[in-house]
Image 1 (cartoon, rainbow, N blue to C red):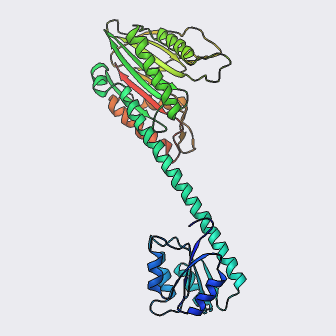
Image 2 (image 1 turned 180 degrees about the vertical axis):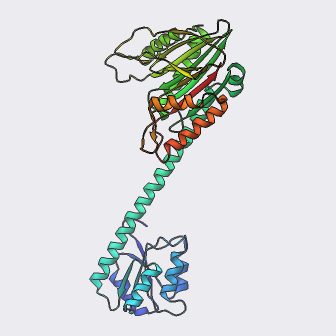
Length: 391
């Protein structure tokens, strides 16, 4: 259908009626058919009409049958049909609408009324077609964007430690990483250096694509800080990471970009049997003998902030079977449950205490299943990262 010159198919077995209709609708392109077979051939063609005016009583198939066939075929189902017929009783009119017509005009008709009804239906179809074109365009753009982000997810996943490496260097563990969108602003990082094992759980500002960009920066910076520069004390790692973030993103008190990350970093020293911990907003939880100890992070982001003091380093002797948990705020912040409220830190920590004696892989399944049950029909509001280790 074109905006200025729509095409109308006139279907009537009377040559006189067709001439009257053609004259009345002379401002439009019109095509004629004298029976149902001709009408369907035109409706199924490449240049299908934008509107059909259809008689009821014709040789062969009647108008109701033609309308039903056209409305059941994908090639013609979107073409609006107006019955124009001498069958003016209530039962005939109802049958016409049941067959799929959008209007019903009885003969003899008023030419001005006919023109008005045709104009209205063509305007509706033009608007509907335009909407469909916009929807198709949006779908195309959305697919391209989604395909790009799906590929970005592959790149992001490739930047994370491989499962073979994790199985090699980590003690018994699970990692639960669930992006809110396709890509994630939460990430984890693991590096073995001598007898020391560095483990990082981070939550970058935002989620989706912005968060994923920041997470890639974080991974690259950690490789430089730990792998290249040999810094292994958690507080010093975060101090240096904050310095690089502020410098790289040109952050100051007046800058618009103040993005960064919340993070928890631990160093497991197998020789000394100690854990060193430092954090920016993200705490570390340790469960020993069925009791939970909370090691609090500093309330300073890994970015420009109101306070830029050095981060605090905690050194904790560990014992066999201690359970350590690092996590972002996505899990406790999720809305759900019977009252549609956040799980909160208290509920999350109770969940860990209740299940910490299970093997770590089983715990991972438990927390994944509980998250789904808690969330229910609600949308996931943030990226989720939970890491568990049994020493």
